[in-house]
Image (cartoon, rainbow, N blue to C red; front, top):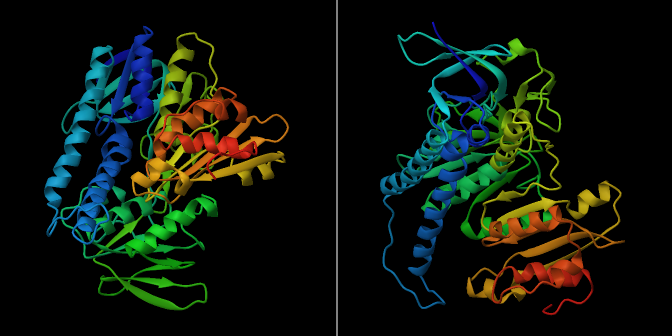
Length: 466
C-alpha cells in the first residue's frame, strides 16, 4: 500500500474543503485534499450554481412567452420555444468552467489533490481507494479536516429511483415532464418547481405544513404565494405523501381530514431537506461528539478529538456554501497559528424563488422571542422607481433595530434581484451600523438599494417616499 504524509488532510472538495485547502497552502501548510467525485462539491456541481442557471433560463423563457402575448413594453415575439438539451449544455458549461477554475487554483497554490473514496482509519489516518484494481493509498496527517457535505433526504414512501428524483436529477433533465409533483415546499422545492413551471411543465406542490416556505415569516412569503398563483402552480398544503399508486403514474396524498386522493405525475421531485453526510466513510471510528446527525463543533470548528476539525453541512444548519467557505478559511488560519473564532453576527440566507427572499440577522419575530425591544419598518418596492422600471413592484425591504440605541440587528427583503442586497445587509450588521448610519448614507438613484435607505428612514419616523 502506498503511503504519504501531510500536515493537513481535507476530506471533501466542496466550497468549505477547497477554500480551506487553498488558504492553508497559501499559509505554507502542506495540504492534501481528497475528493471522491468532482471538485466543487454539491454547490458547484448539483446545487447552487446549476440551479441558478436553470432558474435564469426558465425566467428568460417565461419572459419570451409573456412577450408573445400583450406586453406593456411594446415587445412582441412569435411562438417562443426552448431547446432543453441546449439549456442543459449551457448550464453544464458554467459548471465545468467553475470546477475547472477550482482545480486550477488548488494546483496553483500547491495543494495535493487525490481523487478517490476516503475512509477514516483514525484521527491521523485515512485510506483512499483511487480506482478499480488499484492499490489503496494511506495518508497520515497532523490535522484532519472533515468537509464531506450533505445528501438529499429520501422518503420511505417515495424512495429515489425511476420517476422519483432528487434535486440532482432535476438539474439535469433529459426531457421536460408534462406533470411534475414536488414534495416539499421549502426553498429547494419551490425554486425548482417554479423553474419547471416556467419551462412549461404542470407543477403541483405538496407540503405537510400549512404554508409554503415555512422557515420564513408570512410577510415575506406573501409575494411568493401571489407569484405561484399567477404561474398556475397548484398547492396542496397540510397534506402527507403516502407513496405512488399501483401503476406508478400518480402520487397518493392524505389531507388533514384523513381524505386520500391521487395527483397524476410523470415525475416526482422529493425536496424535503438534506442530511449531513456521515455514513459510508468511517466517521464512526472517531467516536466524535454529535449534535443529532451533525458533528458537534465549537466556535473554532474543533470537534471533540484533538486536531480533528469539521466544517460545512456535516456540522448541521445553516447548510450554506458561504458558511462553509468562511469556516474553511478560519480553520486554515488557526492551524497556521492565527487567533480566530467563528462568531458571525449574521449569515445571509437567500431563497431564489420568484420573487427572491433575503434574510440576514434577526426578524421581528426572532427579536421578540429573544426579549429584545426592537422597532421594525418596511419600505415597499411599489414606491421604488427602479423596481417599477423592472416591472417588479411586489415586495419590500424591512429593517429591525434596537429601540434604545437604533443598532441594526436584522434585514429582510423580498423582491426581484434582492439577493444582490444581501452584502449591504450583512456588512451593516457586522460593522455595527445604526439606523442613522444607513439613513444618512447617500444611495444611488434609481436603484433598488434606495429601499434600504428608505426603510431606515421609516424606522426613524421620517421616510421620504411613502
